[in-house]
Length: 166
Image (cartoon, rainbow, N blue to C red; front, side, top):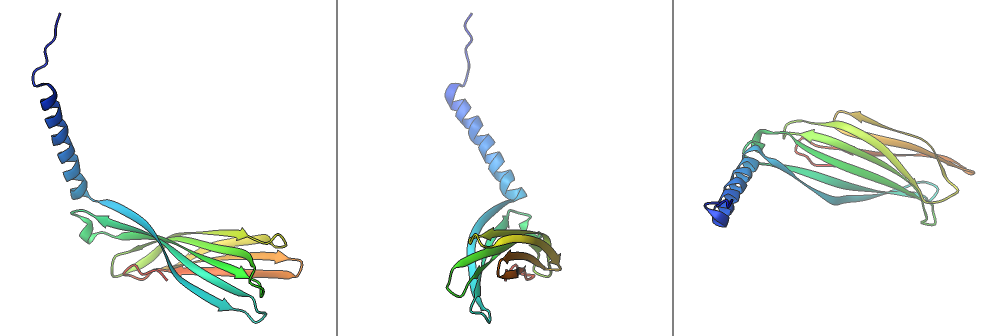
């Protein structure tokens, strides 16, 4: 018994092309997201004993596109790292706050926040840490200790109504 298919390969390619066009059209009508990371603003804070902290912000930007994107709320996630150095310039430890913000051009608010840390010098140890959100800001505070004492290091990150992270 022989089965004959009519239309063959050309018909198969046309059907796939039509399906692809329908999916592409739906994608742009419904919308989608594009995410990218970008390092922003470095700031140096000096302390009386000669130690200092350098903060860096890294933004994971989500851009919404599509037919319905004009009236939608956008989200951004960002992290701020506070790196603590001794007077000799040796990195001792790091506090990190990571937050997700929503904004629409008129208002913004922090949706979530988390706290992280890193230790680069074995004479220091992690004691505690927490992350809090308030309005359009998020703050992480970590406490570290060594034989010479303890130090708390905080990092705060904010989002403006237009999505500017600081």
